[in-house]
Amino acid sequence: MLEERKRKSLRLREMDEMETKEEREKRMMLEEEKRMKKPIPDEVRKILKDHIKMVEELREMDEMKTKEEREKRMMLEEEKRMKKPILDEMRNILKDYIKMVQERRIKSSEFPEDDKKMLEKRKIKSFEFLEDDKKMLEERKRKSLRLREMDEMETKEEREKRMMLEEEKRMLEEENRKKSGERSSTSLVKAFDKMIEEKEKRKKIKEEMKKMKSKSFSKKPPNS
Image (cartoon, rainbow, N blue to C red; front, top):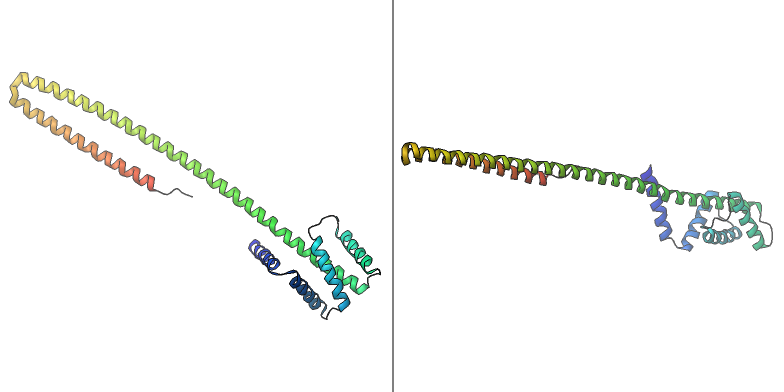
């Protein structure tokens, strides 16, 4: 329903822009003839032309509060201009025309209000989305910080373990040198070297996996 009203509003706006004053007068006369199902007399046509001009000029004025006051004022102005009372037939035509213009004016003023409401709704929605994005970013920051802390802790633990192993290795080397000389010491050193090498390899694999994880996390698009 809103889409239909918007289309009508747009069509009326385009018609207003395209139509010149003369075209508008001509169209209104034809509409009146169609409504009455007979040609408008020349005298009435002239009155209508003058009134179309007058209504166009006073369209934006809101001096008169009610519809009746506006009609009365227009009738009095016409009587004053012609210096004689308006015939009943003419009066009815003018009343119908004034009603038509007012209805059109009411319609054209309603649509911008609807547009305004729709825009307000869109603004509220976009603000809500922004708030969701902010919350999501905060959550991602917290996760990132937690991961960094975990990495730092792991590194610290690994460093401590490595230092302990190196100390054990050094102590064993000293002990082996004392007990069985260089030959037996070399085999133990090789065993510890191999063990440390394996540990380093596992550490590198872990780091690579973390990097891959962080890359895939950063590439993941945020949920809307």
